[in-house]
Image (cartoon, rainbow, N blue to C red; front, side, top):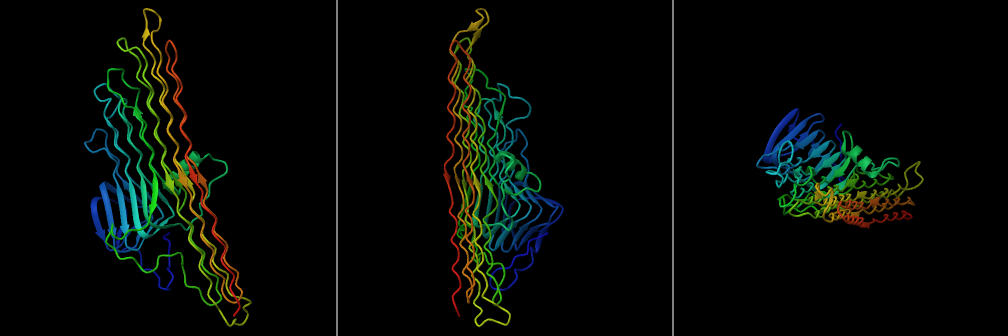
Length: 440
């Protein structure tokens, strides 16, 4: 069911899109519309990079998806989705960029082991007000050849005031990544960076060139809406007020910042190359990719209650101020594990290794996470209306560092790789309570 929203000022917003998408549709390129809606149960598929430019409201209750890339295509980077509105974007369903394509089908061979897959597709949403009640998901990186570098996951960029009408709750039982998986699935909610891409098998031995670094997880960034990037005029009011209070009514609560944001996971590094008869020492494992960073957003301020002096019959006091909204929960992406050290050359005639094994690769660093501040409570109305409660800061969880790679076997085994550094956290603060209303 579509969310119906009213802004302060008393007038209802115009009806959702005069341009709508129902059923299954496909397009790409730049598409300008007066307004746009994707109905619940509908799937709108972008077959190439897509930029929707809407003069009015955008409601996505169904799915807007980037199509999957086919292995071996000339273009392997995931399909990017950009949606711009001069008024508001509401995501109740799913916006998901395209997955990066695999470098090739089937298994890695010497002839294709250095081919790179495609990066995950990015998502950009930009509007003065963005409501995310569903899922916004960047694409994962595609699979690369065993000797290539892994690809990055897609990023999410949100340009505008970011809010939700739903609570964002982390369950006490699941691990963060179990919860992440549940939120990414059907019916889940949240904002997700793409995971770094994987490899097709173990590297081919020297003298084949070798990179093997894990791919970085996609980050999530929030910026102010910039009308210079999209030539729109800003509307006069884009705050957290959702209806016009009457005399002695309570102030409106501020909306919470958008649902939980998860940075993408870095992918594991590939093992080091095994030694050969001509180059017997095992190669060093490669480092895992770094987890994606998350910058959380602040909750909305509660609305002030109106003054209602003198008191109407039956009223005891003015209205209470609206409570501040909660700040956004931000969870940094996990770093990828380092690759195992390569094994030294094993001489079957001597029945032993003839050189040292390679060192394991270092684990990738976890992503940094900055949670949002809680919104301030609104002022109470005269006479003596209580001020609104402060909004709580969002939770903040650093990205876990990736495990160090295992040592390679040899006449002396290699050394294990170092664990990646845990991401840095920047906790938000609680809002402040609103002041009580004075006397008449």
